[in-house]
Image (cartoon, helix red, strand yellow):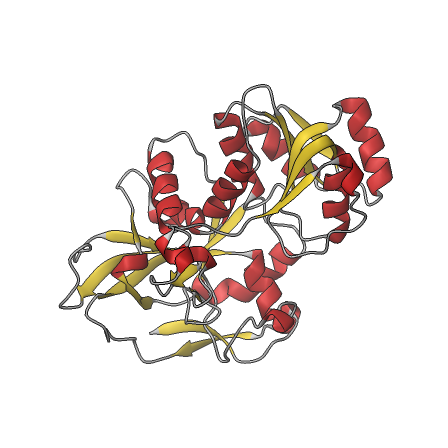
Length: 341
């Protein structure tokens, strides 16, 4: 099969991903399913991994590796013990590739927190390829109402946005600020609106603010590097927020989010970053969130199948992965780029 392979960590401008021909993976376990990939989303976390930003976090845990963790494809073969998935089914794979299914987290339906979880495209081979083999326990069926390129982003930005919006305790009459309106943020804007919240989109780029308004944001405020200046502008234009969600991978953005919520407010951090200048005396809550469980994933796909969630994408060939990631680094991708083998 053809795959884009990472042999060494390096700046994306050096084109570290190489198109190679590799042996097609085979079914090894009774409940494995062999999938022909139809689409794989391109995530900023792929970029961080490729450039070595997450080396200290153990990502990737092995090299060479095939990146990519928001995958949609068609099942072509199944193991002899598989019964939940059949040949011909279209399924998706999220970053949670597998877990032990035995620990307290797994038993509580929080398998994404399992200490032995495998991460697609980081600790196991991912979706920048033509084929992949996965356990039927960790794939999610996709209805015919969503095509594969639009379904793929549900399996990382979608589940990330869904989980973060839920964590922000949305409700009618409550305001939520969404810091970063890209692949994840453009979905979070819509999900928060579905919950009845007043949504304030925050981004550096005018095109992202315009997109947020188009998707239903009640207000859009340009982000400024100085947290103090930003909060001053926010207070004048909108007022302080009940909650905030941070998808922008920036310590400054996290600081601005903390300062932008009212006393007693809630900040959901959905990125890797430090939390500076936190004062306990304002009684604010900071909550982390990461991807989601298998049930969260199934719930999101069911919601998306109703047709109210607009996934904004642009499609590219598999061999163009380096160029797509370079554009993502420059914030030139409007929402989500998807590789189509």
